[in-house]
Amino acid sequence: MGEAQEVSYETGSVTSRDGTVIGYRQFGRGPGVVLMHGSMMAAHNFMRLGAAFSGDFTVYLPDHRGRGMSGPYGPGFTLQHAAEDVQALMEQTGARNVFGLSAGAIPILRWALTCPEDYKIALYEPPLPVGDHSPVAWLPRYEREMAQGRPGAALVTVAKGTNDDSQVIRMLPRAVLAPLMNLGMRAQARQADGEVTLNDLIPTMHQEARLVLDATNLISAATAVQAQVLLLGGSRSAQPFKDALSALHAAIPHARRAELPHLGHLAADNGGKPELVAQQLRGFFRD
Image (tube, rainbow, N blue to C red; front, side, top):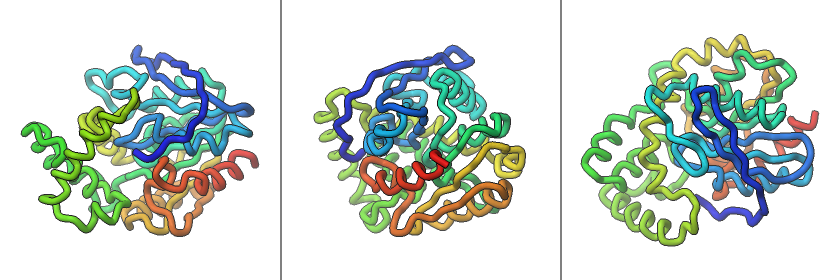
């Protein structure tokens, strides 16, 4: 999960349209910016990214449903529910700037179809289906392994299936990685000190996959977006992420696009290079 920045923060919450509580961390000063983490993450994973903004912006780091300070996904969870969470957060905080990483960018894009044009929206490599590529082809195997009580194996399936940045994940075989994952999860749980753990997050991937499955037509629908948009990606990211950004850019021709050299898909996470991502975002949000 990466090493979190030591920053003092307050906590708050908002109630989404279906009654689900969405909790968030708040710190900094200035105009508001909401930073939405990706799958297999929680608000904790964006502490370094948030710290890079805190001198000029009031930072809001929400937990997605199913983890941390937020309520459960609830029955019948869909992308629409996740977009309503974004709406509730933007209304309560008064923020006009929002950033989402990976699957965390998908609800923002869905909300952006109808949001006013005075918002600024930055998206980092949403895993949207393009052509014959399915970003959730890993889902059936993951579900089998979870049903078999093999969370380490399921975590390997998610990491490999979602094009994890780690060279270790890419190169080592499953038979080696699964025991290592189990050891790592136990060690992390002992040191968690109240933070959301991988053990907490692995079960959320079923619902997180729902965001992708519901986004089948989202690229074509994105022609309706009127807000200012920045599309970000890393030069080292897997090709499907770049293809999705290209398709999204074609659908939103007024959007800006930037590729960050030497960075991968998880650059905004504590364990990546969040300060470099923040440089791009700061310029966009200040313009």
